[in-house]
Structure formats: C-alpha cells, structure tokens
Image 1 (tube, rainbow, N blue to C red):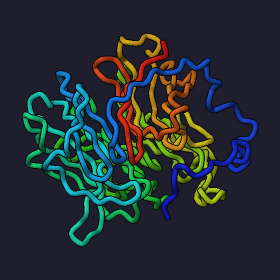
Image 2: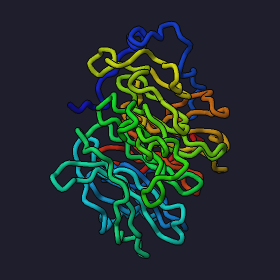
Image 3: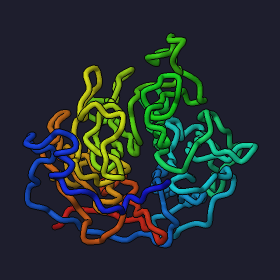
Length: 383
C-alpha cells in the first residue's frame, strides 16, 4: 500500500511517548527570526519534476520529470520539448525518472547520468543507473547505456531512493531505498536500504568497505538506510552527506561513512504510518549504529539537498538547503562544522512540495516543486 507524504502527521508528544524521547533535549533548535526569501518563477508546467543539473557556460539546466521526460530549461525562459534518447521508464507511485547529474568530466565526454525505474523483460521493474552522450545542440542523448540494475525486482513503487553524487575520484554514490521491505536494510546480501558506491562504468571500486566480504554485496557503502532522498558532498570537508525519509517521524540528516550501519529499522525516531511502533525497532538508537547528525520528530519528508558555498549571499554561507515535501518548504540549516545550529523554513507560504534544490554558478538557489504543474524557482534572501 502506498502512503502519501501529505498524510496528517502525529503531534510531537505522541511521537515522544512512542519512541521514548519524552523530556529529551530539543532535536530541532529554535530558529532565528526568519529572513524570508525573494522568489522568481522561471518555468512552470513541469510534470512532477524530480532533479536539476546545470549545464556549463550558462546554457541552462536539464530537468527530469518523474513521468519519464528530460527537458532543457534555457536562461531566456524557454522550456524544451522532451529530449530524444532517454530510456523508457516504469512509472508507478514514486517510481519513474529520477536523478540527473553531469559527469565530472562532462567538458570532455558530455556524459549525462540518469537514475530511473526500468521495466524488465517480463514487466518487473528494477532501479537502474545509466548514461548517455548529450548532443552538441543539447536536444538528445545518444548511445544510452545502462550500467547498473538493482536486483531483485522492485516490490512496490515506494521508498526507492535514486539520488546520485560523485566523489573526488569520479565514483558514484547511489541511494537505494528499502522498497518497504524494512529488514532488508540490515541484510548485507541485499541492496535495498543502502547507499552504494560504483565506478563511472557501474563496476565496484576496490576500496569499497565490503568488497572482500563473501557474505556482502560489494557495491554497499552504508546500510540501515530507509529511503535516502538527498546526497551531496560537503564542499568544506569533502564528506558525503545524506537526507533520509523516516516513517511517520524520524527524518534524518546523516554523514554516511564507509561500512557503517545507520540503524533502520532497528533504530528510528519515528513510528509506523498506522500509528503503531515499527515492529523491528529496539529504540531510537542502537549500539553499533550511527546516530543522525540531525533529525525531526515530525517528518518534513526530506528530498534534495545542496550546500551553499557561493559568495553571492554572505548571510547564507555555511548553510545546507534541504527540500521538504510534506513540509512544503525549503529548509535552511546553519552549520557549525558537522553540527546544525539553526533551522529556518522558507517558501512555506507557497504551499508547494519542494523536491530538488541546487545552487547555481550565479550564487542563487534553485528549487523544483513536485506538482502536476511543477515549477522551477530561483531563490534569493529577502532584501
């Protein structure tokens, strides 16, 4: 059964009782006075847009639509017809066309990487990763090659992950949700509920943490992840950061380190959609598992994430921006090293689900709204 992120969330005190956190220190610091945001609408009419990747030299941005289209937005305001050469996708619930990222060597190879749900030969869907070559006129992908297919087939169209990030070696971090098969997140012979690390061709880097473990899948970087919806490299430390959907409550920000366990479903700050505890949960923390850097007892339903490392708006330096779906806002977290010191919510008055956030080379923040009439928005601080 699929659950909507628009479901009404339980009050904090009920969650506290269910998870044993009553009387604990606040998890979300009291925010400073809001600064607000100036919003410019750049494009609309997108069908549940999911991801955004800027092309170099002010050529615009590639945008995925969950229903299977890849489009080009140009700075003069034009939104292209769907690009040719995009693979066929399986669309159901949260499944479809997901992330788009440019190769770190895009200037020389023009590779565009996509993640998506791929229909199998018998109709069964699989999460997939592949790349194609973007034409010189930015109108088509050629020679699209699927380099990774997750096994076994997806059981449902929920909790699928699908985010990418490149490390400094050009390897690909790929998020994989638990597909609502909770305990598989703890099984090292399964790829569900993990963050994976692959080579640019879909192989296994030989320094992956489980590469020599015969009882584990060598692609695994971390495990115990429920539904990782955001991945980004911290520009100041070089470390991978992740945002993760909890169940009802318990959304997290994590620093996924090689070989570490992030607890799900044995440890969670949330409860089930039914209002009952997670059956496998032992508590909010677990010996031998990593605690989140930051979490929410009422789920914003976290999505994409981006660090602000530009010079355009000094008041946003050392910030992490995170989209919120059920929370219908853009969350700005102020960082002090690996700690969150403040939280601010922007765009809440628009009542739109924020799926993706990126920082452009111009220093502005760009977001996509996950709606049937989805929009591309440019964000600046309130003057």
